[in-house]
Length: 136
Image 1: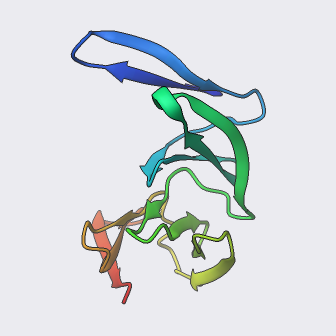
Image 2: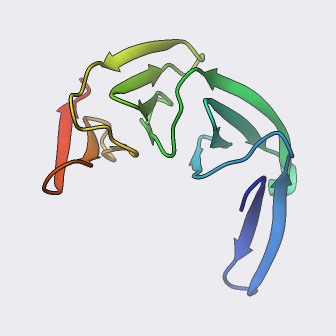
């Protein structure tokens, strides 16, 4: 919600604020390998999950790709749709263009298959289509 992330305990029926940072205004989140990834404008922040599941400090992980949502591969690589491109960010934070000039597609989200072999995104213009490309 805005610049906060909440933890939900479904068994206890409790919702608690887990993280808040006025500089991080997130739209979607991903959890991978003990960290939470938060897109905010043209940056993606990473917050480590600490002992007792407490939030660590937000650290800028990637910059330069305006996004709403993104996919994360089993190895920690991010695939970030941004305008008419998809940017690839390695686990060490190195950016490169994965797909350029996607024409009219302009995807707002991407998903990586559980086996890490495919990247999917919805086509936004024209009839609804789900597209995919091999990652390996």
